[in-house]
Image (tube, rainbow, N blue to C red; front, side, top):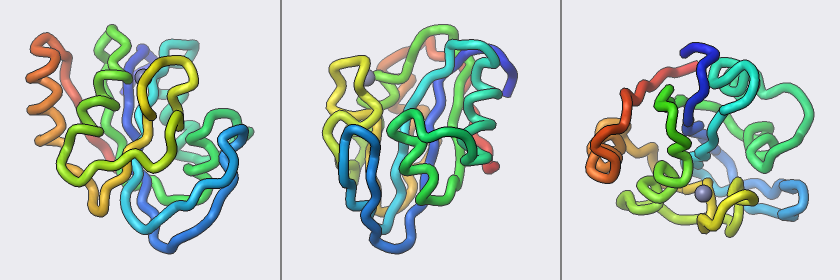
Length: 149
Ligand SMILES: [Zn+2]
């Protein structure tokens, strides 16, 4: 991962049911399972700065995902340095996977018309299934990598 721009997904594992506050969205029930959040980093420092911040889990609670990140464990990150903004497509593909549900309307989707950029699963979806589905939507999509922080 470099400081070039790109799109990423955080796979956040939650063990125990909990109630958290998510900024202006208000109360959220976080159930056991895996929450996948999709974002993009097209500002200074690119993907490396943004994902590094999420991995550390420090800093101010600014985006919706910061509140969820503070309450869960970051299990894996999927990312691409594709120069297109792919986050809405990524979120749509995730929502279409088997077992997907949208836990909170509008989460992470303040700047677009998606139902949400957060999708919940009982167990983590596989990156290979995700890649296959994404390539079906976007045949020219650049490489998608996975790492465990
Ligand atoms: Zn969107």
